[in-house]
Image (cartoon, rainbow, N blue to C red; front, side, top):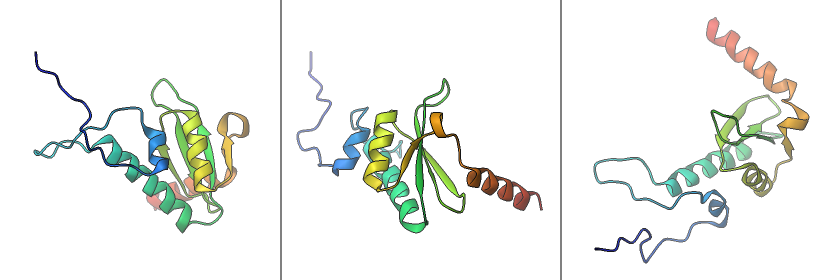
Length: 130
């Protein structure tokens, strides 16, 4: 019986924030163009969230609880109402990520969604229908 090693001996070190998303072991991308490794997806998610915070004013984070269809998510909302949502492993991780981004963080169970987000969604719907 051959023994299979799941983790290569020389695993590259990830940034500390990326370790918050370590629910699954790292996988490699297949030579035939398979899906990206979870560590690549984590880095892309963190980069997207950091870019959103850096390029918008007054960003706040809202932690959404898991539902039967999706896991916990982190929702970032700018003062304009523009928003972005990304899945996270759990609510604690969402609070940790928001804290590391340096933005105020709220639990949507207690605060609900801000009106500016609803207004932005309405404007986007009107713009698409025109």
